[in-house]
Image (cartoon, rainbow, N blue to C red; front, top):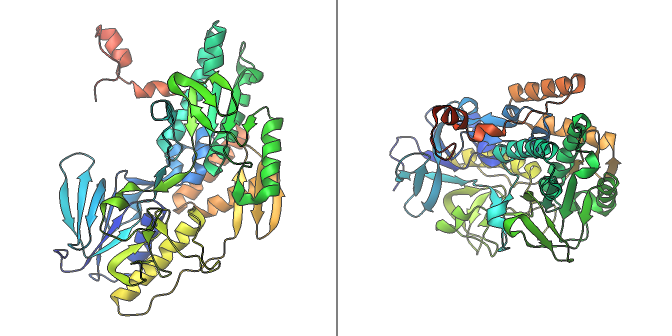
Length: 449
């Protein structure tokens, strides 16, 4: 069933990197009445994930790492909901709005950009005890929990309780895990300077990584440097080690270690969004959407699926600079793929030829906390302050919209002049608690709303 509007409807599934930048490119290139763009995303904003660690550490205001879709995508229809299935043969997507009943949305062209979700394993306790690090909500929760736990330990004389709340466990040694771990350890080091009974040596940070190195994207040498840097700061780095269980907060590792941990952060990889398995579009053996070099969806035999496009983490995009391989699922590729996808889609609408996506991977930068980092860019290796500065400059140039760039710059300037903000707002998760106590209500706090 085609879209009901006179102009073809382009349905963009997801409002992350690919969804946002593809839509921006379409709105820029399309002429009035040439096509209508509809974006479906559960959140009304795009999250710039590389800045989540700094938001967790208080260096950046959380509002400056998210980009409002409606304000940014003027001229597009933005639906706050989730695409739960796609029937491309019928050109219909099933939509679950944030509030309300499911309904069918007809379209003419679909752009699959759902991104990725955390890749969890059937480890006892993970689903109940762990938290991820992909959203601004998770980042701010971890910041507030760190500050709250330091307060709890400061006020307690129970040594077992203090050890538990002061132990923070991170599972996964990729970008998300290492940067979050390093920034939060930096924050704890700063906060403990103002505490009386909790010293920084009392706070325990544990990293669990199944491989024999961390940050593989920056190369072996820089990865070893990062391990040494973290260990010098007192962080326990456990390589070639896996999490066996964390039921009830009791962490059990494959090397025999057992300890209580109140905070467990799972950053051990991602996988394609499960919505892809609820479509009739072709997937590869890893459940990724099959796409060609021009980002059109292709069948196993290489033939094009008309009216279907895809890019980003959820897609197997051929890397033309490395024949036989696929582009890495990162922001560097996603943003460029999205722009090429938008241009190619408009070209097809106008009967023109598409252009293959080609980008030679430039390298990677990673922050290890304030004034510390590692980088390998175009073969040049940097560490310490130069790498940290490169990390900031690069990501500042990539965060969408001028207002967000200015906001981040002002945040950095304020953080450089004044002291860090160390107030926990964890009570915001139970906003009715104080009024209920005053009213004498006997119920679970935060049960309303």
